[in-house]
Length: 329
Image (cartoon, rainbow, N blue to C red; front, side, top):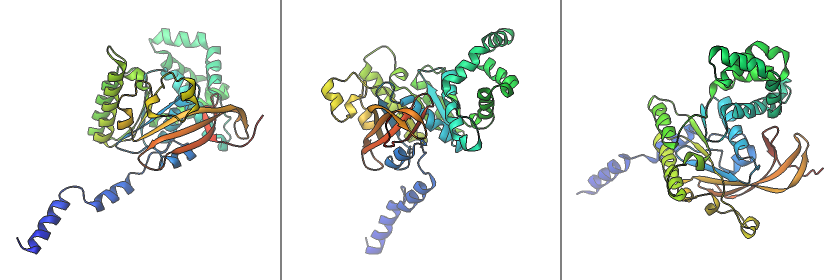
């Protein structure tokens, strides 16, 4: 074979796959999906990356679900169509927290920030009316709440904020609390992708999604594989919330490890990035949030940048993270 023929054969084989130029163009067209937590997004190379999953674990009360809610809201507000699959909280509980995120995002427009518990208080005042609406039409409690908000929102700033959230950002997201297992998640998302939609997927949380008869290690490993294949096949970003196993004192004093994810199995291999949230001190006063918990986000695996830590201030009542400020009570 002549040199020219060899070169032509080489170029044909080289270009039969995915040319480097195409890959570069593709990456530029599909930027990471931001979580809305700036310092963490920067550490993760822009946010959640398509084709893989990012796993977040942490101490109880360190903000795992709050981080998921912030990501869902940010993605919806950006038109990126997130689907939030909750295996722990009810739809009402999640939407209440998303409302807090919404009012925080709209505060520059004069909207009063709402603590998510205030929505519960407002609805408790209307419990009899909600029960009547649900019983009369066979509605779920959530449907009854939405109908109540439609007719009474002008009387209460909390319900008014909910109405604004319902009519603007909420239609851009899907919140599900009725899925049976991770296989159903995969089936639904695959069908959406085959129809031409490419949503961002958030699952809260791994161990409940993987629940079943058998060894937890195997169940979690299987669920991890399903989500990894889903992200790769559909070329979508997935955010996966996880609990940690019980740690002894020496483990808590050391830096977090991938093996500390409960039933970790193949999580360390499947995840594109892994983050562990740890309470890193007592309560502090943040100038933009008030009394909050100092939390350190340990990025312990990162295919898209460097590992390291990010210090954040977290308010559970407002369901918000902010860059840590050196201010104490």
